[in-house]
Image 1: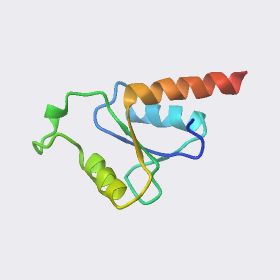
Image 2: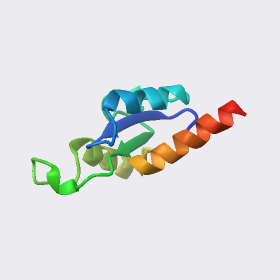
Image 3: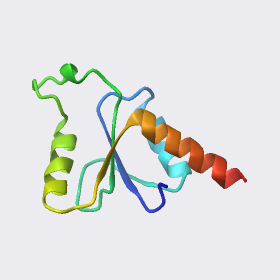
Length: 96
């Protein structure tokens, strides 16, 4: 589900970034501050993308992840809401 993932967050999240990172860490994921060759999962905030100051529809982290994907790197891009569902499922599974 999320095992072995290196997670990076981008965009406006529904919770403080630190809380999102703590949630990811609690279900055993490594959290990084930027997209690198180690990134396996980019979490994009469920947001109004017109809010980017650059006028772009995607953050620089999102664009970098897409460039790495185009070069063959395996990175999944998920909306925050999908990540929260996966994290909840992982936490529920761990408690069983």
